[in-house]
Length: 84
Image (tube, rainbow, N blue to C red; front, side):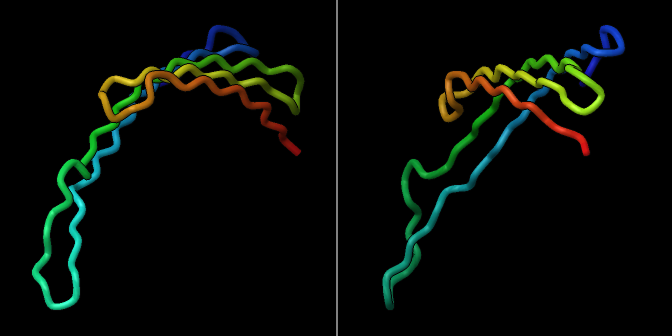
């Protein structure tokens, strides 16, 4: 979700979740066995701000906060997209 504050600045929020199933392993001639603890659920809530520096350059920052034990505690990003 994004919200424009003015013609140069916008705020955004996002919720992302990644779920991975339990892995299995199999040796030659043996049956499959599940790998204990290999499943995961990583959910992150992100808040960001984008500011237009000029007609071609913008600065986009984001802070992600982990909501589950499998997610990183926090992630900070800063990008400078350029339009040709």
